[in-house]
Amino acid sequence: MTAAAPGRPRILIVEDSPFIIMALEAMCDSLGWALVGPATDAAQGLAMATEAAIDAALVDVTLGEGDALGHGWGIAAALQAREIPFIFITGHDPAGLVPLRFAGVPVVRKPFRLAAIEIPMAQLLAAAAVKSTRITPAWPS
Image (cartoon, rainbow, N blue to C red; front, side, top):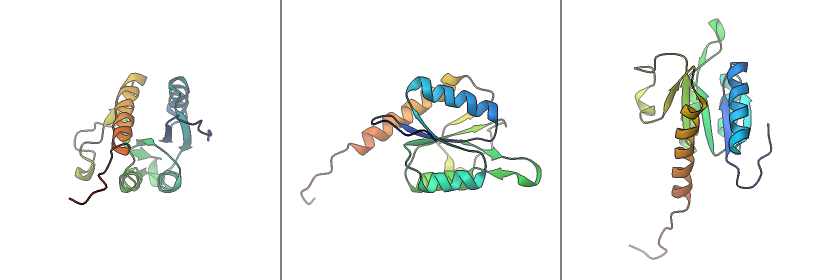
């Protein structure tokens, strides 16, 4: 796990493919984002999504194989509860795959070009920054 420099967005990566992890690590580094993780299974991902100091996340929809197959739904729910934006990544057809409670969450299909992650992640980070800087009036309504 990389220590974040001040002002660097901290991105949690939950992914079980070493090749995709390497590509995402390189992308985070080139964009000045601090990598958190990676978490390579659902249990690690859930623990980090619940406890880690993060600004956004990339969550693989399916983690593991065979009897060890897990889904990223619990991780996504934990992120939503903390109001942390995230993107699903998947090697499967996203149509009908993602539960309705995650409607509106960006889904990027593997294999992907890094711009397919960079652009929506930058938009999520910008929206989160605007949301966190909104001023609430101190006077009663």
